Structures are given as structure tokens and as C-alpha cells.
Image (cartoon, rainbow, N blue to C red; front, top):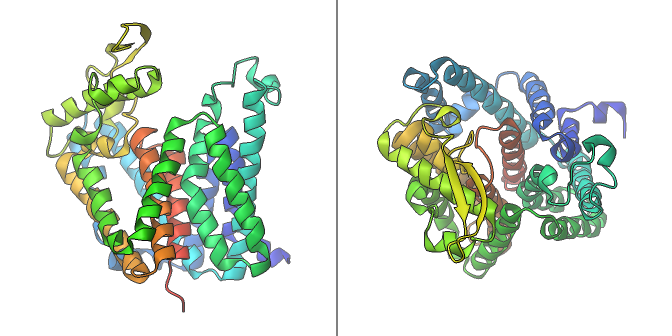
Length: 398
């Protein structure tokens, strides 16, 4: 491998793995630098390409920036909207760069990224099981046995696992496929040995949906419909406080709290259903810091007291509804559907490819619907990385 081969923007992407586990807020940095580097190499081709391939996305971004006009904090909303545009530009540049890179240029950085995230998953799992044996010196004795410090790392791995493994099995030499399958298997196992219910649920639903599509590949065209429905119906679809689902998980305070948050968020959506409250309004939503009690439906035991809406609703589609209302949810659903239409057309009739595409999409949708704020830079960077890997995997063969 020559110096020239290493000096390419895709070699920055493996840096995301240790950052995701140890300093997740920094994940956006290598993606942003790789995006800027790619933008220079592409010589401006990103802008006409996106207008040609997905014209709905610029309209969504225009809505995000314009929402400052009716936002609770107009200046903060406007600034976040501009940053979001830059994040999307970086993500699109990486996406287009991976589309134009050769198989040989991609497989080593991609393999390094997979190996790095699996290695970090194993090391952090050891740290959890030993209650901080590896990280106690840095965490000043704070317990890691609940796995919370590493939840973003396992979410990163959950979102990237299928896109990364799928791409590697296409671009890597045949002699490397056994190693790739082995790394992917270890990655899959470590998700269930960590403590994130969201990541476990994402993997399980992804595998289940992939199995259904493999058995019935004619269902694949319904996939964007299902995802679009998730965006459009989320305020009514998300389980609510004191519902049957809420009482089924009343020994898991974190899930109970999220359902309390979703209840509060859905109520705010109904107050401004068309255009929402403005970008990032959930951070300062009136009543958001009102205490809510998390108690067992069956015994009345109080587990803890949380806030009605602490910074964000832990649900990406619901957050889009809160910020931009029906118009934003419709544009988000249309953007996703437009992006998937050409890929689905190319994979139709191929059982394996259809199942893999499903496995690439469902875990990420589950994670953004149950775990984190949609506008967190580390999450957007992870989603763009997953989209870039997925797009390259299902790119038409020249």
C-alpha cells in the first residue's frame, strides 16, 4: 500500500469507530473533514447531482432554516439550520465519493472500520463486565456496569453493521470473506451482550424483517411505504404513558420514561400540527422540564422521577413532527422514499439483495425512533456513513 493510496478521504472514516465508543460527540469530525475533502475532489458535482437525484431534500432543508421564523428561539433555530445544511453537504459529499471510488480503494478502509468497531465493542464489554477495570482511571470511579457510557458506541455499530458487512462482501477479495463474516458475527453477538435495549431491538427487528423479505421478496417495494408511514404516523403510533405497552415494560424505567416523553411530545404536536414549533424547539419546549413520576402499573413502586421532555424526545420522526409539523414529516418521508426508489428497482427479484437492503435500513430506523435526538451531530454523521455504504453496496455494476 503506497502513501498515495492512504491519502484519500475514505481513510478518515475508520477514525469514527474509536470516537463512537470513547468520545461520540467527535464522530462528526472525520466525517466532516472527509466530506470537505470529497467536495474538493468532486469539483462541485454534488449540487447538480442532488438536484437531479433527490430534489425533495433541498426543500426539507429550506423548511428547516425557514422554521426560525416561527421558532421559540429564532436565532438558535436559524444557526442550527445552517449547521444542518453543512452536515448534509458533508454527508452527501462522502456519499458521492464512495460511489466513485473503486472496490480496491474501498475495501481496506471499510475493513479497518469494521475491525475497529468490533474491537472497541469487545474492549468496552470487558470494561462493563469488570465494572471499569479498563476505564476506571479516566472515569474517576463512576460505574460503567449499566453500559450507559457506551450506548452510543453500540448504536453506531448497530446502524453500520449490515451496510458495512454487505459492502465488504461485495468489494473485498474472496479470500477475505471468511474474516468479514467472522467479524460481523462477533459484532452481532456483542450487541446482545451490551445493555442497550434499543440496539438489541433494532437488530432483532432488522433480522426479522430481512427474513420476511427473503421469503417473500415481492414485499420489498412496501419497505419505503412502511418507513414513510413510520414518519407520518409516529405521534399516534409511539406507545403512550399508562398504555398496555407501558405497563408491559414497567420494570424498565428507561423505556417508561421515553413513553412519558412521547406522550408529552404528541400533545405538543397537536398544538401546532402543520408547521410545528421550529427547529430544535424541543430543547426549550414550555412544560418540558415538568417532573413525571415513573411508577409500576402493577405495584405502584416508584422507580424514579424524570422530565416531560429533556432536550429531545428520543424519537427522530416525532422530533421532526414537533419541529416542522405535518409538512416536515411529509417532506422527510418523501425524501426517504425518493432515495430508496432506484435501489429497490435494482434489487427487485433478488432475494439476498432484498433481504440485505432491509437489514441495512430497519436497525437504523429503530435506533432513531427509540434512542436519540435526531439532530445530534454524531447520529447524523453515523446515518450518513450508513447511507453512503448502503448506496455504494447497491450501486449498479458498471
